[in-house]
Length: 351
Image 1 (cartoon, rainbow, N blue to C red):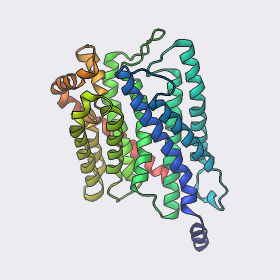
Image 2 (image 1 turned 135 degrees about the vertical axis):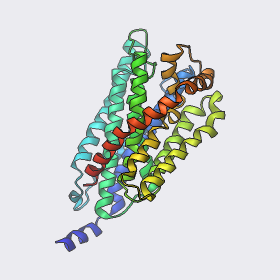
Image 3 (image 1 turned 120 degrees about the vertical axis):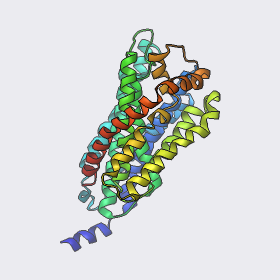
Image 4 (image 1 turned 90 degrees about the vertical axis):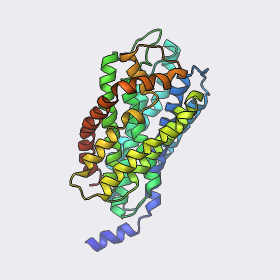
């Protein structure tokens, strides 16, 4: 029986079955990166149109994900052995939400004018992004494990980054003061927003990065690469578009240090439960990884200033000096939750 199963697996074209899931996830990476860039443009008060660069990339990302979803239905003999019913169902739901998010957003703008970060239509879009990116990860990991082959650290790191940005979109929505419009005020209460950010951001970071390592046990580089892609996308979408933040790029690159350190600890050390130590290192660095947007969250509860884009570095440096030790400690503690979730979810993914 085992020989028969092995023969079946050998005759299945690995790349033909895995590429649709890769394309599915790549589309989400484009959507999330464009979303981050769009937030930056709003902060800079740049004129917006339907054909603004971030919007074009976002719509292109949706099209890419749709093409990946269509590819899931290519006829491939014996592909049912991969246990892909859940990712296929999840991706279908995600694609449906991505498709309807566009018309809904157009209706919202036509009815209420400009919308904020937190709006019903944006929640539909972010949910679609999350479902689609999760389906992509699960599909890729299960195919890899069944066929004992790897897509590679680069591709997998990118796909995990899509999940990271999708979850971060929800975290931003309930912590950033960007949701007040002429018709609605969906801005979170400042104290709630600060507490929420302090707890949730480290959980998200630990969950994503520990998961990226746990589904590739003993393989150094997956955690670091996922973190590196997150840093790269943030630099391209949040720092470089703002001339005042260009000088911060070398310092932002230092975020890679805790990611590499966590990668070494979880894959190279012989420490029992090393993933908790790695998670604590990751979580405690959230205050740096979520720069510059996190400046707006803590400013609301500490200084109550109007944050012009040119003021971001100054205000950030002022509040971080005051609450740096507290944020480091809270981030390390919150990361335990993200690590526990990562361990449990990783076991379910690789079944």
